[in-house]
Length: 160
Image (cartoon, rainbow, N blue to C red; front, top):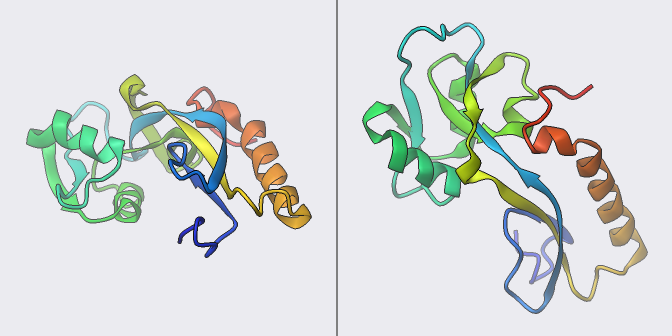
């Protein structure tokens, strides 16, 4: 969906917009880590799951390809499939900590990957960001993300 063309009013992005028609605010840093299903042993070599090179557009998917090419046993075309395979106990995936740490059936498979930490931005169309209903929803999104900032940063493992 395109904020600039007003197909949506608010977006969350991992980088500030480059268009002068959009306004943004950095909300929090997002950390990433490798995750596996809780039932998988930490004492055995597990297969990695990566996004296919032609679909690898995120920093995390490119990082996995660069650092774990030989360990990747399964390639998928979407982040949703990474998540689906992780909760199905298929192998190791890299996810944002606020996702992986909030899923009780997953556990970390190593520390936070510092090289992948990035900002999370809320983005509005420059002209509509002051409309009361858009501002109210935007403020609520910011409040909710900040309430769980430690989860986004990889400092807390579960939502309480």
